[in-house]
Amino acid sequence: MDVDLVRPGLVVAVLAGWSLMIATGIALPASAETAETAEVETIANADEYFPDTLGSRWQYRGQISEGPLQRITGRGFVNVSTVKGAETVKGVAVKVFHDTNPGNHGPSDSYYRRDAAGIVYYGSEPGTALEKQLVPYQIVRFPLEYPSSFQQFDRKGLNLGTDLDGDEKDELTDMQALVTVVGKETVTVPAGVYPDAIRIEARMRMRIHLTVSNRTVLGSDAMTAWFAKGIGLVKYVERQEVPPVRTDRGWSTEITEELEAVEIKPPQASLSRCEPASKCVFADHARHHELAQIVFPSGLGAHSR
Image (tube, rainbow, N blue to C red; front, top):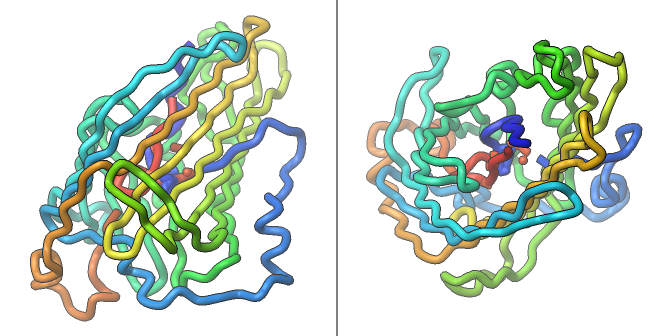
């Protein structure tokens, strides 16, 4: 069974992508529920956690485990993410990130815009039918505060783009996604130790309406991504679960990517044609990927199957 639901965020969905839980009802994660009462801190110069200068390059060591819930197999892979250039999408100037193998899904380009309000994901190529119905959507909100949360989207009646129950009709789905800035913590990856990395979680829940039986099944995608100041995405972990439909076994995919090499180009390379930095176009799964690929795509995060 191979269900490619959305290619981000990052995660980013990021922050492509998202966190999704298999459970009835939609409940906010504990970190979001406590955000209202916890003391909120604002992260200064938040844009420095998401560098997007032209030619910057990140190499990630990845591990993917997938298969029926009762039998999971794993394998390694490598993904290299590069700021490829700038383009215009739907009349908006965006930065283009090229990934060689995000989430072990093969090469793709992802499009982002950063402005004073945050970072917006404009989709990917090749993208999925489901993703095209969702973009553009925000993956990071400025000012960046923790703990804090915002709803990424709440959409009903989308075409899943996949026939899960074998009647040659694509299923419809309702989707909700939530992004939470949890706080700062130390992260260790092959490239080194990064203290005070920002931890961002993206959670997506799907209610899939089967056409052959009028039954509703619940799917989930959960991503956690860490971003270091001046570096960008250093690690993400994404887990997606698709419930059993035609068999008694559901399908699970878990993807991890960790930074093992990075080269950040000087700011002049991408800002020379811009006005103030806050007006310039974005930048960087955190596959990946509808946190999607959360909602964190590859410069930001994640990728889904």
